[in-house]
Length: 120
Length: 110
Image (cartoon, rainbow over the protein chains, first blue to last red):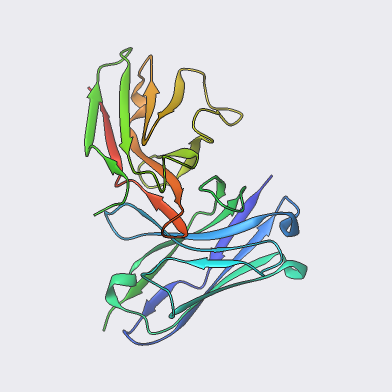
């Protein structure tokens, strides 16, 4: 069955960096687009980044553009999110999601999420 | 302030039909598919409706989606206690080159 397992979350000070990983299994990772979506405590969902199958097409939400970098390693069935210059407002549960469309919001599988807390 | 607008809450009694609306603009709902997600308390969101009105395998047919112009709706009939959750609409936005979500609607089964 499809599994997406995020890791790398934790407590980090403002201005510092953190890298999230997502291990995919149960499907051919190199056949799918992928995205990261986050949810601040008690708040709604916020899409933050998308990467195409080859990694040649990437999109970011304005809130993270220039600070976050999405990448993937198809040989390792893994998705990553490098987060730099972290701010308190980046505190959220970060979900790794499988994306069915090049341009769209069709996320058919979600990981369980990893919590990132940005605080001094 | 979310790009897609949803009412904060909705409610109904068991067996009733409820509708949750999602309002957008020409750059998102007006030109792209709408998808709906259900988030039960303490869990990750789950895909409920894709491409405006398609149900993934396992989603019962008492749940349906529709779209007209720049608005979309999610309808749940035969309401059950297990439907109590947060519901989010989402669509690609051509102007933003990204995905936009509604703020979410909390459904309460009375």
